[in-house]
Structures are given as structure tokens and as C-alpha cells.
Amino acid sequence: MTKYSAWAREAWAVFQKDLLSELRTKYALNAIVMFAIVTLSAVSFAVGQFAVGNDVRAAFLWIVLFFSAMSGLGRVFVKEEDASTVQVLRLAARSSAVYTGKLLFNMVLLFALAAVVVPLFVVLMALDVLDLVFFVGTLGLGIAGLAGAATIIAAIIAKASAKGELFAVLSFPILLPLLITAIGGTRKALDGVAAAGEFQVLLSYLVVMVTVSLMLFDFVWND
Amino acid sequence: MPMIALEFHDLAKRYSRRQVFSALSGSVAEGRSLAITGPNGSGKSTLVRVLCGLARPTSGTVTVRLDGMELLPADCRAEIGLVAPDMALYHELTALENLSFFAKVRGLAIGTAELRALLGRVGLGDRGDDLVGLYSSGMRQRLKYAQALLHRPRLLFLDEPTAYLDEAGSAMVSEVIAEQRRHGILVLATNEPGEVVFGDEVLRLGA
Image 1: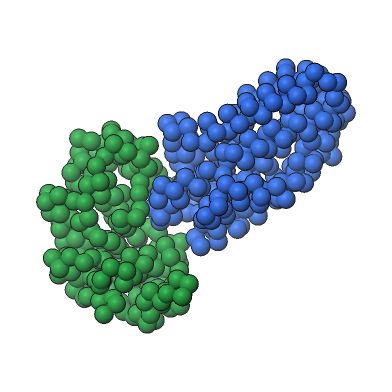
Image 2: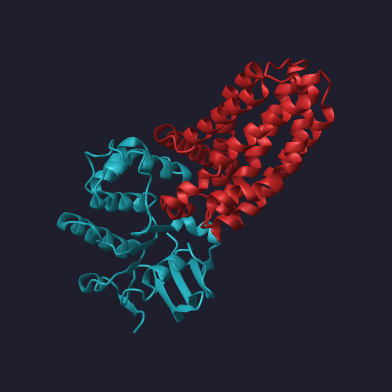
């Protein structure tokens, strides 16, 4: 077994463990889904009857996704601290495998959420998606970037006493460039305009965020 | 097999204004054991956490050597096992799922039969498929031993080794300690006079 395949198996084991734990406890899933459904309903009742532009609709979609993510993604490290499992995990697994496994888990969680929320949003807000490829692509890259940033921020705030408040406060400035770009890309896709520039920015954000996180995580995790 | 050694030099730990311990130095060679003892709050558990790399000392160094060569902190993971009262395993997983997870993240190819045998060794042979959340405190302590021994660590740290355990559990711990003293290094932190005698050397804190 090569060094890299051993690392990949460790990261996969962390992902599998988190997924199994989540399926049994619904620790993050309940919070995310409930928040998303409530926000989606509020937005559709408040705005659905008015003829709003695609820029407003795109912004609402990302607001629902952002705040739903904030209500659940931070728990991936907080639950290890709260349950006192963090010590044994630190001794057993290498830090980069822990980060990657938890990043994968957050991505899967957020993609699952999007698979429920986005079709509902399209129906409730009577969206007419003119460029489906760019719409799905922008959502995919935006969600991956959101999960990438949220995972490292979750690791940072897990040791703080005011975890919940800090997560949203720290995440917002870091995620602002991603949100602005994703909203712009989504609006263009709804209008049927190619959002190639936004695509590049979102991809770059994802690559930079994951690379920097992998470099920083060891300090955060072992401090 | 290469010889392992644990060395610590001029260790000090301070939390805010409180000096937990200072100027601690010593070494433990393979086949030897160190018992850390002292009153409550003297820093026994903190010292164990510092020695096994889970906490940074305020000053001083901890070194693990393999045949005289200093190991990098990342390489020490494979040599260290820990049982401590303030650590927990995953309550939402079964005992077997816990051990299987830790085997995978440690890169060990261990089958279910071997894991069940390990659970049998710590007295949980017939409870491997139960959720850890349904275990008693003593059963959780036994499972911590199974997790700590999974990768046959050369450096075993035991903080309050017999906490929550019944007579049979204490006997199991005595076997583990005897085995470790033959094939590796044992560091234990305890207040029990009957456990302090397991240390070839005794370090008294807060004295």
C-alpha cells in the first residue's frame, strides 16, 4: 500500500464514521433540514407573490443555503470536543486525513441538503432556469467552496466557548467573496447568460480554500 | 525490534496564573515503568497529556527515541496508546465499529475475528455488537483498553487505570500492565498505593 492510498483510506474511514454517526444521531441533519425548510417557507410566502427579479431570487437561494449550512456544518468538530472523543482521534489519525474526511462529510451533507432545497425553491419561487448546466455547475462549485471554508472554520471555533455565535461571525467575511460570486453566477444562469467568469472564481476559491486549510489544519488540530 | 525510550527534560506547565508543575526531568527505557502520583490537582493527568503529545508544555521537551533516533511527533502516534478518564469513544457506534474505525485510521488490517478476540481479552467478548452508549462506565473503561491495545503500542499511558472497574476488570489491568512492562514502556498516573508499586520509578507531584 502506498503512502497516498493509506492516507486516502484513513480519510475515507473518518468520512464513513461521521456518516454512520450522523445517520444514527441526526446531530446536524435535523438542524440543517429544519432551518432550510423554515427559511424556504418564509421566503416563498413573503416574496413568492411578488414579481421579483432573478438577482433577488438568486440572493434568496444562497441566503437559504448559507444560513442552513451555518446551522449544521460547524458541528462536525464541535461534537468531537463535546463528546470528548477528540483526544483519541488526535492520537489515532493523522490530521490531514481527519480534515479531508470531515470535509467530505460536510460536502455530502450540503449536497444532500441542496438536492432537497433547490428543487423546492425552483417550484415555490416559480424559477425559470434558462441555462441548467451553469445553474447546476455554479451551485455545485459554490456548495463545495462553502463546505471547504466551513470545515476549517468549524475546526477553529470548536475549542472556543461561544461556538455557535463565532461560527457565523467568522464564516461571513471569509465566505463573502464566494457568496457574491455564486449569487452573480446563479443570476446569470437563470437569465440564460454563460457564467464562465464566476465559474473560474468559484473553482479558484475552492482550490485555494482546501489547499490553505490542509496547510493550516495541523496547527489548529494539534494546538 | 528497535529499543524505545521516553525522555523529558525541564518540563513545566502553566495555566494562566497557576503553575501546575515545573522542572520535571526524567527518562524511561524499554521494559521499565514510571508511576506518577500526587494529590488531586497536582497535575498528574496534565503530565500524562504532555508526555503523550496531547498538550504542549509551557517549557521543556519530550522526546521519544527508537534505537537512539529521535522520532518525529507524527511518527510517535503509532507507538502510543492511552487510557484516560476524560477521553471517550463513540457512543453512537458499537464496540466493534469503534475498534474497526480506529484500526482503519491507524492503517491496520485487522479482521472482525481479531477484534472480537481483543474484546474478549478485555471482558467484552459477547457485547461487541452493542452500542457503546448503552455500556456501563466499567464496560466503557474496558473498551478504552481494547482501543489502546489495538495497535500494540510500545508506549502505554494509563491515567487512573482501574477507574470504574470491578475486581475482574482490575485483574485484566494487572495483566495488561505486566505484559507492557515486558515489551514496552508503561507510564501510569494514579493515587492508588496498590498501583504505584507497578512503577519501577515513582514521580511524586505536588510534594
